[in-house]
Length: 268
Image 1 (cartoon, rainbow, N blue to C red):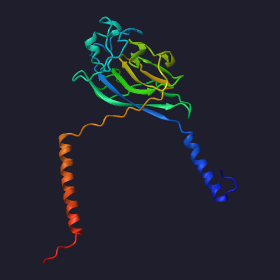
Image 2 (image 1 turned 60 degrees about the horizontal axis):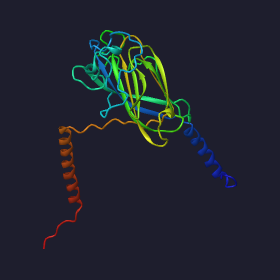
Image 3 (image 1 turned 45 degrees about the vertical axis):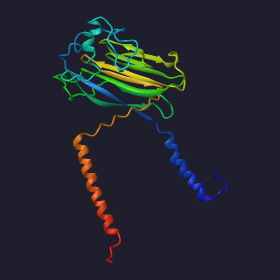
Image 4 (image 1 turned 90 degrees about the vertical axis):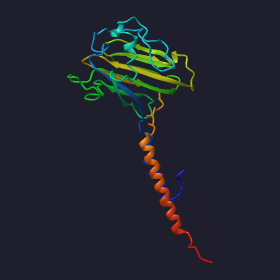
């Protein structure tokens, strides 16, 4: 398209190419916002025994509230019972404290369509919430991610970590790595799940770090997850009042400004 159109056009084409090529080559990043809940070492489900991988601890289908349910016998997988487990992924005053943690999945190479997050020392809340409780790291926390994705043929999902990891796709349990154990990997080929290409499906991941002294969290996937932005908090009453006052003062200023610009009145 730049042929025989003069030096100026050739120059513009060269500049466009220099600008466009790096843009096309830029790797993508998907940011997923997770909720992390900190627990004290005294909680009965944390810092107890190393059970090894224990499957069958949670429900095979994710309930309507989006939280897994403990379905095993009390004590299995180092979990006291269904009541204590229900605290893992729910804010409970005096039992846990929560915060938001962004997880950034970076494309391994520009255009590869493979996204990865790797952290072999995954201690995201050191010195925060309940603190480290005299330990070198904060070892007692849970994490959950909820998002969605459009299924494409050939996608897979790999997780490596410790301790408990449960992944639900389309509300069905596809990764079951319960219990207190060393770093372990699971691969899910989405083609085996009966999904329909082009349709959108829910994705939920539940993780728990329950025991000293290691923590690994690694995701590698061909799924282009939909970003899950943080919810916008509702304005508080004082903020609403403040906005009302600002709006009222603004109206007065605008009224005076209009009055100053209007033609002067004349007597008759």
